[in-house]
Image (tube, rainbow, N blue to C red; front, side):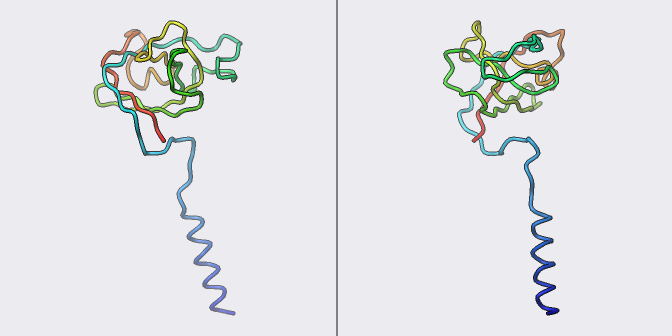
Length: 128
């Protein structure tokens, strides 16, 4: 019985110590690209985004061009001048080329300041 208790306690401690996902994306990345441009927009219009959900400026998400092959819900990483942040595709942007990302205020301010308005030379990649 004592042995059984030790085994149960050991398994329980392994489960408790297992890593959990807290909304952060997976670390594996693919489809890196450089030379992208990013802008920000006010997403709190009261309407749903093109991916079907209501958006908040406090969430970290991005709108991609309608011609972009990147699907709704795809997590992406962005790096500007050594600063990295992550967001998911939650909207589409009619005026965005495939190398232009329209970011939520929260995501944009992780990488730059609102008065800048535009971030150039942005590294962007999709996360698997």
